Image 1 (cartoon, rainbow, N blue to C red):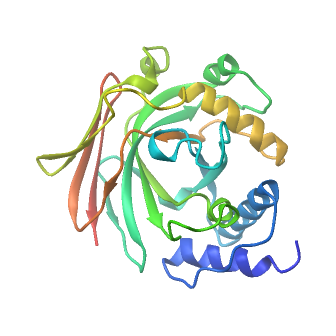
Image 2 (cartoon, helix red, strand yellow):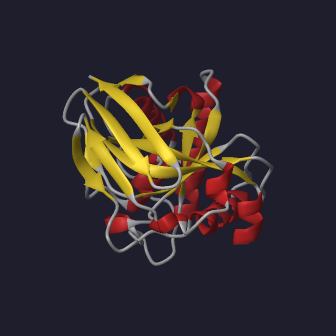
Length: 254
């Protein structure tokens, strides 16, 4: 993959520091693009950060099957960008941001693929309400390969208290979720559920990570798909309620 070091450097700078320019798309396969994404992650680790978990992409809503039926690539989450519910998070830089309420699966055991849904569920210690913080580093028409190297837009996550009861409860993909900015409701889950089963998504993640020489460890956090999406237009307190799971709150400063 000659010439791809500039892509890794550019996307590291964009994600770490919130500034461009964004590099041109590499001429690589999907698997090669995911390997380059892992090279960007390794840049964070070399700079003193650490891996905190993963996201499973294209599992819900308008983005479902964005790169083809059943294709669910991963993205990484770094430890410096994991915040507890109630935190104040400063979102700055030249790119826009959005919040997506998501379920966060907290691993209680190692998980290495290939595995099935039940093995994946058994490795989960609890399910927490969360926000994914998306940073809009790429244009909507960006090529697939560049989007994969970029980590599909993740900037960080805000995580509430995990519940072991939620892990064994009802259909998690169909729970009622509501998002508020201040006292105003600004988003909600769809009336007709359109999300992959979170534990099936975790199994898919473990299987794909194994193909790339990686696995899941106890304490890893995995977000599995957005119930809705809310643009961040300025400073505000955002709160999301997840029926039967809990709530998550973040104060956004800009």
